[in-house]
Length: 128
Image (tube, rainbow, N blue to C red; front, top):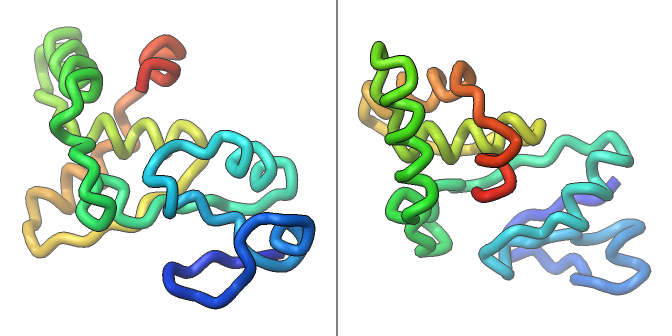
């Protein structure tokens, strides 16, 4: 089992990295489906650190597709207005990934927890 911690000295890439070192995808600031498949196959739980883009400076909440899905789900049931953040968290959760996030705002904490109730379609999962 390997661990990946930002700023660590473990080897990136190569044969030894897949055996002992780092399978880090964060330096890419994007999806790394091969790493996710490998982790899942080996029973390794994957977590997204700062998944809304605060560290990577990727505007996850401002992405058109994320906003579109939030609006579509809000219109569907009518009883709830889903946020872009909840869509992003739901996308992670539905892939079996955890999300490490932080807030001092109780509303944001409640939104993050409520994201587990949002069910995205297969089409939405692929588009995100």
